[in-house]
Image 1 (cartoon, helix red, strand yellow):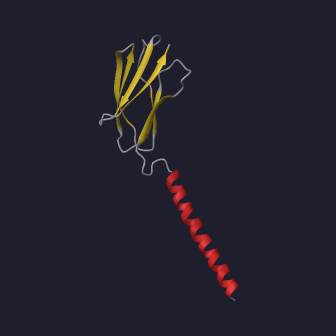
Image 2 (spheres, rainbow, N blue to C red):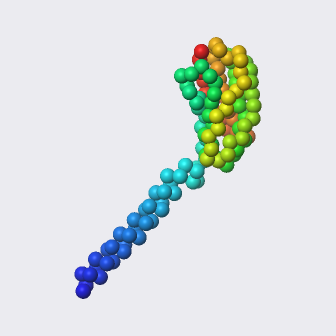
Image 3 (spheres, rainbow, N blue to C red):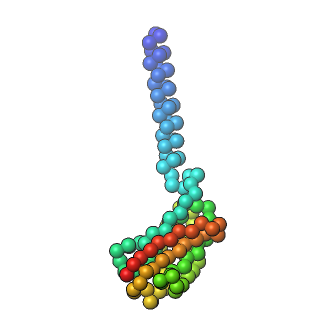
Length: 119
């Protein structure tokens, strides 16, 4: 009788601990849970286009981008990307077929990221 209680106790502890670990693991696998990051990257780095993506996992949804050709501004714009979303931005740039292209993306709180492409 004592062995059955011990086995039942061990099974209950195992089930409860497994459920707890499953809940904790799924919470931390969510990219938006307690996270505060965003990224910018070219949608196709080997292509000649300047299409880039903003991957947002942050509470800030407003982004400002500037396209520079050889350190001279050729285009800029504002975009809203909601938390947990990825938005592809296609800047309207006709004269960016040669030279060094820099895309600066920033938020309102002085957080800035740059990406580069050389033609």
